[in-house]
Length: 437
Image (cartoon, rainbow, N blue to C red):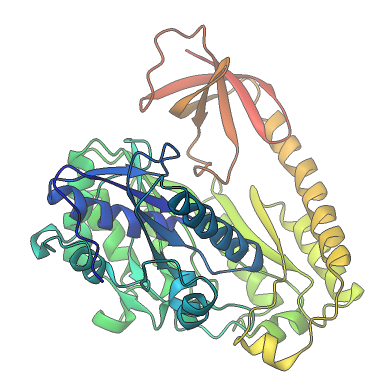
């Protein structure tokens, strides 16, 4: 049964999970908007009678959040607040048959690449001419640019290849067109995302094309910051570092997830890089770009992680002193090599204790680094206002996941979406306080 949307009807798109889901939702919303409907995003008012939930199926907590959200909107429909519920995204892609059985009240389930099918299900026209156009859900001054889909890596713990399939690079000309459109909309910061930035171009150009893509993007007028997220360590294209040095609008910022630093654990993770290679790559990056901000993510509690191997990870964090760090505890994902090869024997309490201790080390590192910035002037992009402060970020900080720079609201000339030179006057563990100069 199709859900035919009436003209001027409101449709609510609810996005869960990562920034890649955000981009998928934005493409969907642009197609709906082009059909002359009103599109809401993450709306809680129940004004929209059709709700499309873009789910996450990456780890256990994210799956549960997606299920809880589906059930919440099903109850709203039972209470007559909305008319139909559609579900798309990673959870739906991976567990469609199970979901259809367990939650049959959803009108229809779609996968991660079913945008055209969703539009047609709504009784709307899918417009190929809108390829690359989006209705932004981020603040208008920054946006994500997804440069590829899927992943060919064989990491033991990761279900992404099972959900999103093989690595598929988006053609460069399409990305350039999308980035230009974003700049024309007022986007000043472009955040490149993919499951694996390192492999960009291999499948369609037979080469690592990330450096070339960066040069093309940095030539687009209006883009003042270009930021890189999720570059795989193994086979990292070192030419990217030269491009960073050449182009002022490419942030000296690199998100490169090492995940661990014990050779034994890295082998079990099937990462394709080892401890020595980790240190060599970091040394090279910091030698080429001394002022770079390195962000990484690490996992504690992978099956078989001993105290000795965990302590190697502790030493890694202490020695490297990453500028930004995220910690995850291992989550067993069915169908992955780790889940099929080992029983997850490390207690959740131990995983969490290990993660918390690493984060306490990072807290001290971040505090020291922040204190060193007092008295300096840095360029800050203002994202918005919360209470008594404007919330901004430096070139060292990505939205949602990194540190913030707080400016008192008495700075009356501050405008959201603008850059300002800011004198840092005070520092906390993960935040800086400053004044526009």
